[in-house]
Amino acid sequence: MASITQIPDEQAVLRTRDLSVYYGESRAVRDISIAIPANQAIAFIGPSGCGKSTLLRCFNRMNDLVPGARIEGEVTYRGPNLYAPGVDPVEVRRRIGMVFQKPNPFPKSIYENIAFGPRINGYRGDMDALVERSLRQAALWDEVKDRLDSSALALSGGQQQRLCIARALAVEPEIVLMDEPASALDPIATQKIEDLIYHLKQDYTVIIVTHNMQQAARVSDMTAFLYMGELVEYGPTQGLFTSPREERTEAYITGRFG
Ligand code: ADP
Image 1 (cartoon, rainbow, N blue to C red):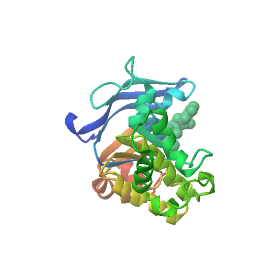
Image 2 (cartoon, protein in one colour):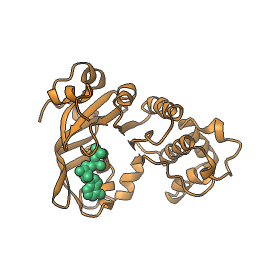
Image 3 (cartoon, protein in one colour):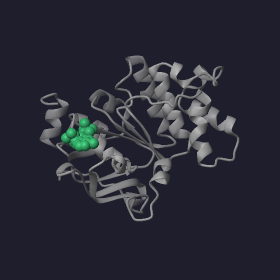
Image 4 (tube, rainbow, N blue to C red):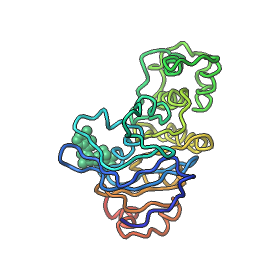
């Protein structure tokens, strides 16, 4: 395993140690040890099928929901193992939220999409204020403030994706995982999501899976390059793109395979 950037424990919000993920007999993630620093944007890049989404899903136990998936090794969140007996995966997913490739709003009003999560978590504060704050954080408030009771499904794809981000933020997570959040969107909507990621990292840690290297270079502080289930290289984004240490990274970022 080559060149893992050393991040001290106190700065790492998430960490894996010798993490492998299997689907049945086949191993999709191979012995990955990686530390995720707080309040940064981290991009996972690599060719399709290299294990980016599988690794991402380990951070909030979404692979628990995939039949036949099992993990070996450790994933820790601020110290404790996320997979220890007694850890409630629902609570894990509240603190470590997720946004998917295809926007998936509930078939409810804009307001209810945001209020739903906090309500089932027993939120007792001012719901109107929480809805507004979440929509503002996702840079959607100005576009929807006069139609909060309209169906979320009437929004454009880009607006729906920002709504899903607002929905993830409404339950006050610490980390937001994004799996190709802009790949179904047009360039303008994509740019809005990228701007948003840039702002979100002031308050959250954001991990984004992308097959788009330019996007990784634009939004992330740290980049991890995966290839065939292995973490080939991980480090500050600018360095990884301008002077990669590994030949496989260089081959990928210069377009020799992908
Ligand atoms: P990436 O996100 O880099 O495209 P994935 O994590 O989706 O890669 O996939 C890594 C490997 O795991 C691929 O070989 C893929 O076919 C396999 N895989 C992903 N999800 C499943 C699943 N639900 N069941 C079986 N195999 C899967």
